Length: 361
Image (cartoon, rainbow, N blue to C red; front, side):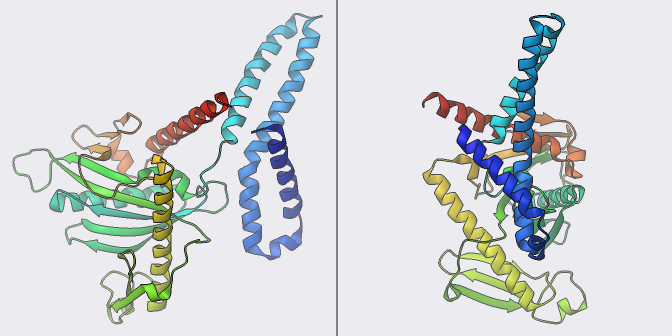
């Protein structure tokens, strides 16, 4: 980013600061929240820039004093290293951001090959994400689920909403989870103690606050039926569950865990909008050859992103060669290790692309 663009961000930050200091702005909660989120997004940039400018001034002074007092030479050397670190940090902060990093997400977990064992593993993944959300202080809501009656799930859809008070939301952390997750363990039904391999698929897509995709009501087929899941006494006595079918694409969304048919219908359409937007994003990504946005659509054990090995208590993410022997903790929601590794690899890739682009200019 050139100096004029950086100055533009500094000016924008100052203007945001001015607006947020105006009590009248906070009368519109939605506007104040958007301004606050952008302010939080720019704060690390401005803070790093100010630290860099201060360090550069200190270095100039240290070099001038070192000519008379050699004791300042060591301080100048330390400042040079600090400036190099700050410049690298600022470059990273100024890289183009994923526009949906602040978004909440809709996640689907689907069992695949492996029958009941795969369904049980899908249930393990669901609980892992629910516990991770709890650790992060997020709100996770199961929108629809098809269980097997034995603790497993054929498929489950959940919404995960963040705190909404920072530049990064749920998508920034969970966007790497899409793909095939493979499990290796001895099933409870295995009498010979043999290790079986099965898989479950995870789909995750951003749920933006302002959905850009418009849906023609004529493209929707809406069915209502009796809810079968938990939700209070009324859930089993009224036809409150809603199934929405998007005729042009064949996408089906079911929601039964809200309190009324109207709420279930609204929530199902909201999920449909997010799915259609994710589809549009993936189509655009394919044209741009951007593999980061691709989502695995088939639960095939040969196309795995991660393996959960119970006998060795090992988790392996095959995209970044991450390996750790704390599977029990991971399944209890301690996902930060693998997610940090994936985020670091993503940053490194974007920095490499930036450096390559700079060298060709």
